[in-house]
Image 1: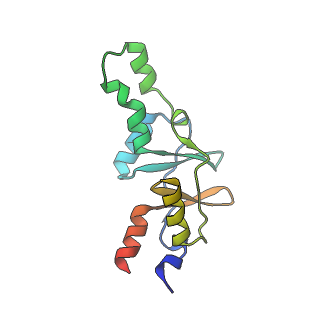
Image 2: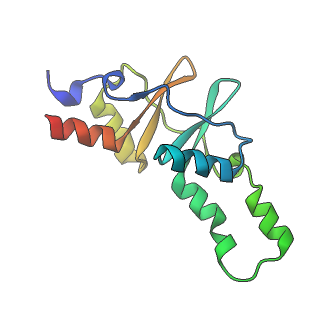
Length: 138
């Protein structure tokens, strides 16, 4: 069997870390940093509602490091919630989909990772790094 026909479930990270849309950007960043990851599925009532990436957070907080901001603006940026910058309704794949399908969706949508969803619940995440590992191991 060719590797690009392999199922996502065999190469995804199962049970990935997830966060709530009400999590602060600071807490989301810390979770990413501590676990050396660049994206987090966002769930509400145990269902996927979005995804946030390290780049999303960096763009959102960059004004903290630019120019003169008043204290109120700085506090607002620090307390900002994930829901204000996350991508709502992200592109997803299922665990039975193929690596080829995941790679095509990533290219088409210009994203580097996809939540793996089954019955509206996040069961994994597949990233470009997972696909690169597959190619190298082939």
